[in-house]
Length: 105
Image 1: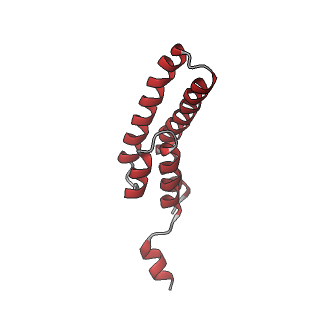
Image 2: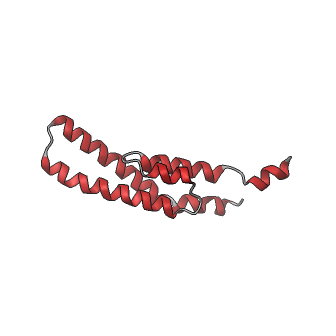
Image 3: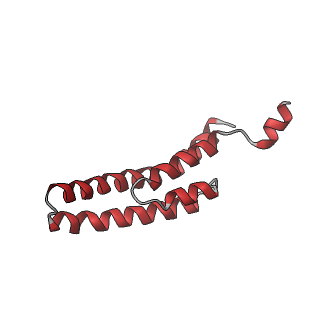
């Protein structure tokens, strides 16, 4: 595996990384808004942002070629699903191929 091939999935997941961060931050703002006083303007702004970020995260995970069923299911969890899916995808990308493990024995 060359450095270029290792960097390719990481670059392809850059939008998922950004979306997962936006999803988590927007959920945090919405929960703080509820705890502090429930301002309708904040909810009207961050609600759709959170929903779009969540949907984009789910779609970006499902489009990833190295996704597993577990990563796709994690992406559906609102709020932290994008980060959980990204973590699962990164683990999948760092594990050696089954052929490489069998050949090493």
